[in-house]
Length: 310
Length: 310
Image 1 (cartoon, chains in turn yellow, green):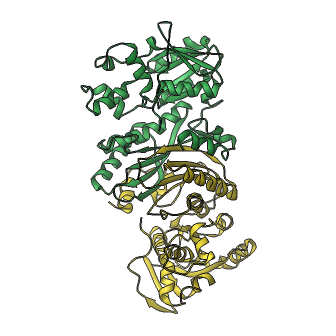
Image 2: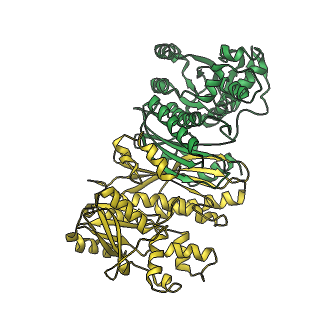
Image 3: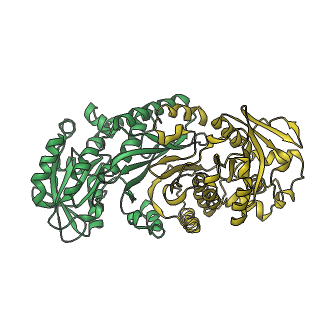
């Protein structure tokens, strides 16, 4: 049973409207947005990752789900497994303090347990946010004709991971993207009134765009040649289609993917400029299903693997 | 670093009033009570436990924290680690459905991850409840002169565990107490206006009473001879002081421990009778600190181990 099978099984019991059919990364409840994400050693982070970075990532991946709802973070609950290594635990706590301070989010509570010796480290965080006024965007609102946008640059964290694994000459920008993802909270809040659908890119642009297409009942077409790649990524990878496909399937971007009426484009650009955040139109929604890729208007076959499955 | 050390470390960053100094089992937030508890294979449940029972326990231990606040459960978020055993995962999902239906609580969302092969099973649940009107009881409100009460019977789950381990001839009552703890939600909600302090007994009566004493800045005296023991427990253990001390330190009771003005006793008895729940006065709060035990008015030394430390 994989993640999708298990979630399908749970969907039978998550019948409350607040659960949004478990099709979203967050639940909507009495004006609050609630999300719970876990990270596991060997799956979501490397065994030799710095504990401060693990703490940062745990906070950032959860706040990124709030960002995609346009929610303002209000607090978190921590589920912590003691690792049996006091220095590691202490460093994690320090990193947690730094991350929570950075995003202005209080620790409200949680649970601390010990796990048997040798078990992989595993942590959970529940983040609570204030829902924006009006409709809270889901994955499922993209409409044929919408423009599809992404924030920031794509693929840096994937290259950062390759650097961490010794496969590429390291540079700070890509390593930082991998170690210290930045949830797009301010942008998410500002975009809410202007988008039809929004989600964060956690598992890879292609797989997440496919999820948006499925939830929206439409097709999403993405133009590979316009994907925003950073100079730091292009310093270690050639600017060819394979590099772009790798960037679009690497995951861990924690950028926003959103769909909006084409007529909103100027407004959306103004908002992003005002916040000094780069955004890029990367495609459009159409009648149909699934995702289709083009490169300079030529159709490109979908890669076997659209993103990170866990 | 043990649980207490780590929580002490986190307390420095949990400065928001909603966190209640991490001294409570739940956070209080905008009229909601939030709690997150984890259970780990080999620590909180046996490796051969039925998955339906594990799911029940995960729900029950979290709802028990809500019960102690007098909160009405509104929803849960699940943090699930796929076990690599599809039948186990399916049975867990079935058990989760049963438990949530039993308590009328919707599944709102959560996260599903895979863990490396061979890792112990580990699950988290965040429970959200509606805070009662007026003051929400904490551990810390007991006052000298208060009567100290417990709900139900104490020690059944501990004996149930011993039965599961083959140490005692099994009986259904004790096994059920271990496998299917019953959070005292209705009682907790009804008691709120009448108690000074309330908490659930998760780690053992003695250790939890000591926590209440510490948080309240008073001493709690407990009379061992009046501890409510079930007929099922006394069917397999002699009614001697050692049995009572074992019951008071076994943990997993998920009964309520509460402190109330002695003048409220009649009122409290009426409430419990109306709900058909047994409650028993087991001691009183006094000036001082820590807990003191007596047996038929003779002072009893504290056992080395006051409860389950995890």
